[in-house]
Length: 339
Ligand SMILES: [Fe+2]
Image 1 (cartoon, helix red, strand yellow):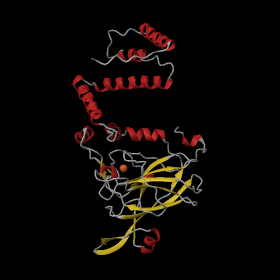
Image 2 (cartoon, helix red, strand yellow):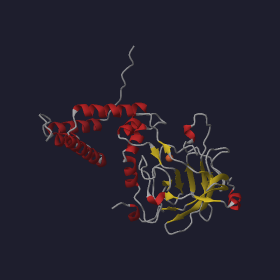
Image 3 (cartoon, rainbow, N blue to C red):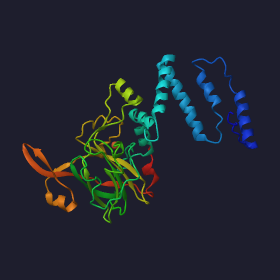
């Protein structure tokens, strides 16, 4: 037996609205004998009945016009369009709850970075936003100030990160929640390890009353984005690499301040000027400083490691110091608006 058809009810008011929209379309410009030159105005007219959602009306009108203009501009032919829709179909087919191929496509075309820049205009004196990326995990463990966010034996070079959370007037922000995540020294996130049970190379901690925070971790390294799907195939066709420069992600939260999503990019990292997802901003470039201050290591609980410098074995660790500046929820709207 085939399943019974689904039934649903529609209110009289909704039926009336639909009927009016259909009548309006029927009375609009004739949708007949359309040409390269007049099809756009006709398609826009047919899609001009969204009376209850002006933003949607605006977006669909602009989208139709921009996409038609693009097609006319490049003279897109049938075979090329077939390749486009087959490609987009394959992007959808490989996507899952954990594999966001569509987001990846948006990333490598700079769309994610553009939307991010429009959504979060730079506020003078405040830390700039950067891409969230696909590897944030809200299950990260809380750590005390000074604790490590990496488990024992994590591959990578020991690093101490410390800084202050401030407002745009330079006042410290007490009890800001710092949510940080990074790759290990192999360029791999915890969720990419099949055999890892539970979060690692990530943690949550609070700033103290002076706005200070500090934790130990490993120095992040560059890593390739997923490239075994249609987006990877596209990058190959475009003769592009798959890599992001070394970076450490942060979300900083406090009830009185705007949520900050950002990342710190290692200035001397390979790919710093060719991030495949366009996330790097110069204000977010940071330097890891080599230090052999073993007292500092002891004070902050960092485990130093040995490294050969100019033929001599040295013991030390990396120090990353960076302050974050938050924008208050009550700071003037004019600060947060792009002109
Ligand atoms: Fe990342």
